Image 1 (cartoon, rainbow, N blue to C red):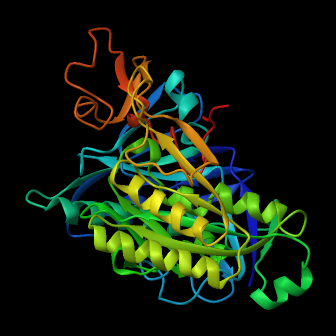
Image 2: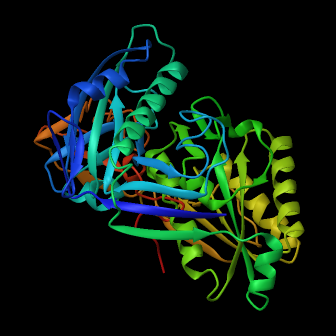
Amino acid sequence: MSLELGYINITDIRFGEISLVKDGTLVVNKQEIKAIVLKDERLASVQVDLARPGENVRITPVKDVIEPRVKVKGSGGVFPGVIAPVDTVGSGRTHVLKGAAVVTTGKIVGFQEGILDMSGIGAQYTPFSKTFNLVLVISPKEGTEPHEHERALREAGLRTAVYLGELVRNMEPDQIDVFETLSLMDGNQKYPNLPRVGYVQMLQSQGLMHDTYVYGVDAKRIVPTIISPTEVMDGAIISGNCVSACDKNTTYVHQNNPIVHDLYHRHGKDLNFAAMIITNENVYLADKVRSSDWTAKLCEFLSLDGVIISEEGFGNPDTDLMMNCRKISAKGIKTVVITDEYAGQDGSSQSLADAHESADALVTCGNANQVITLPKMDKVIGTEDYVGIIAGGWDQNKHPDGSIDVELQAILGATSEVGFAHLSAR
């Protein structure tokens, strides 16, 4: 399976009479965006705004971030099973508005939503301070249940991203990257002397509004399975969760998973990127046992020499992480675990809820309990009404001068457990 990603570089964003991309600028017709969002009868209103890197702007509470893409060759369309029909994606060519993003915000859905600062110290901790953001401030109709509110925001963001993607369908990309996944037999024949490396991605699926969707199916309802990494690039996996902002894999992160990109970069050089396996993070012990057994079985069946395991979330999923690590290691397969830590504000607490001696190769993406002070911003898109109740905030954490004390837990993507940020440790 081979996928070409054609990147159209976006270096500015503004409103205009006609939506188009010209000379690196994404021009957006505000009224057309509003019409797309308000097709959903669950939504009462939407404010459309812009946020550029370096501006004195705060966006909060953020629900999701999506990268606009469009399928121009090959089967299916972007976000299959949700926006496009349920066709297998991941081959052909997809065009990408690289540097642009759709951000959804508005009235809070779940308390674990986040803050995105476009400048200042907060901007240093979120990758989305570097993107040119089209922001949707969405209000649901009175009486809308939280899970329907979440779904309406999720689908509005995806529809908007698809609309923007269509603007570059017929454009010539600035750059084209090719990602190819060989069959198991072909890979063995082509790279007989390279270690066979797999990637196990754990998907957040702990319950209502702690969801991830695979081809439109709630990940709680799947058993571990093999997926082509290029399918993920086409939006086969989307975020539907309201977990802590610091380590939430937004849809944008799934589309641009750096573990996948790094493994492709090394594929055929010092390793054979043989397989990607997705598994879930359930609440009940029986479900954890089932999924970790299946994951280890798949790794053994594929004759993998090494496996990278990434987590999403913390606490309860730490058990799934350690089960996966322990059982895969017991098959004689080397494992590397990627997680973040919740070590307390002074860094002295136990940083993971579970641990096992097999997790002897671990990459940390930072301590989510670290406290920083965010300065007052000239403009807030959304509302700061919830900064004291979102995960990583606390009562009276906003000061008279407008500054806000928060843990990194409240900053979108600050301790990304796939490394879509810059924090780690040595």
